[in-house]
Length: 246
Length: 246
DNA sequence: GCGTACCGTTCCGTACCGTGGAATGCATTG
DNA sequence: CAATGCATTCCACGGTACGGAACGGTACGC
Image 1 (cartoon, chains in turn cyan, blue, brown, green):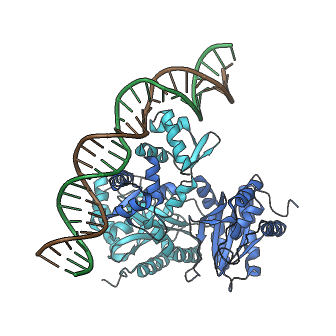
Image 2 (spheres, chains in turn yellow, blue, purple, brown):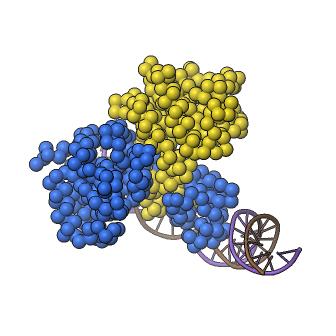
Image 3 (cartoon, chains in turn brown, blue, orange, green):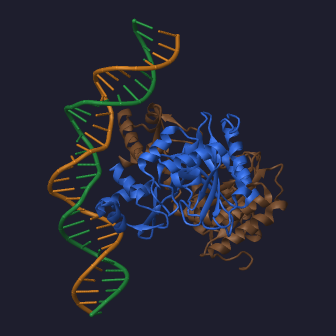
């Protein structure tokens, strides 16, 4: 029963704020009366809300989501630093954490009129084709890279690196320079520069990035700022500063 | 069963990232084997995670939380405007939405070294003793104020207004000026200036504020900026601009 | 070292309830 | 009007959720 309720919650996707009972039942394979009852119970807990005859996810979910420690702790610590980075560069700023073979975006700041970057707060992207993902892989525990290779390197754009050898070489360069770059590997037109945030164990627990359109973003312009922010966060978290260990 | 699982999720509170099985069972009154099984199921859905022998809320909850339409739509629209406001003032910026007799904070930007304001992203405060709450009440549907009065005006500090007549008068002033203020009514030492964001129906769907320490924040300094941001958001949402309807 | 208290985990008999087909009423469309 | 689709309710049937007891492990005090 619990699994089915969670299945219903998982049926909601970005860009579809409301779903009717029939559509929810179709998507989940749960019989309509059952779905109806489960949604009623979820509604009583404010996990979903009614909008006319349709349902939408409820504010209580947002509240619980903000209690998630991996996200909350980082977000609170990082928020002022990311605001500073945003103010200094006026480009789209991200903070992402690793989860399996993917990254999850936990903070995002973008300017009015900024290009629409496909990343989404609370959204996921494969680690191997994003700058934040590469920073997390290059400075993470070896098991993280293993998980990514085992999950397979999927192609997102013609520029995605899908050969393990090429990725490995790129990650070596990231380790050497402390900076990861992305050139239309996750989405056409998108470029990104990222740096790892190291935790007390010395491995990357998050990554900071600046993203923009590939024909507009100048890595040379923002690299130092990204690196500075990542170092400030690393210091705050009690992690070892890059360059101090080589 | 579903209710009990949701009860377990609700047992987690700010400042307590991890809870053991025994504590969760104690808090919820659910027998340990039952709690153990439910947490196992929640773990399979990444709604909770194991940390040693303890549990913490899982990243999946954060992801779902970011899909909540009331929060997401506003957050995406408002983020650039709030970043601008933050950059212009370097004070703590909030965006809050109404929920019953309370407000829920859906966006917050604060500077490194900024005073610790007790508000929390994803957290709640009573509407009647916060500036954002007053803005939402003054420009909201009458039922919202009715709900607040029915819920009762609770005292949070010696300065909290708990007489309905006084609150009513204050809200009239807010309607006249378009600005709500808060002077240590929700927490000692905290001051706040807020303005309503109106939606297409002409009522307040959110409120923008700037908060700081009462002996430091100068309302005269930030009022126009808060108002400007609220108006920009109102315009973006297709709401009627204040002053244009009087 | 031993006893006590507490933890998390597993088991299984008992009691409870989750499920969905069928029926109903309503709205929309051709 | 008929057909289609929606949301809602009902209840017979089959399924499962529950928690006391037992167990092994850890930590602490005497």
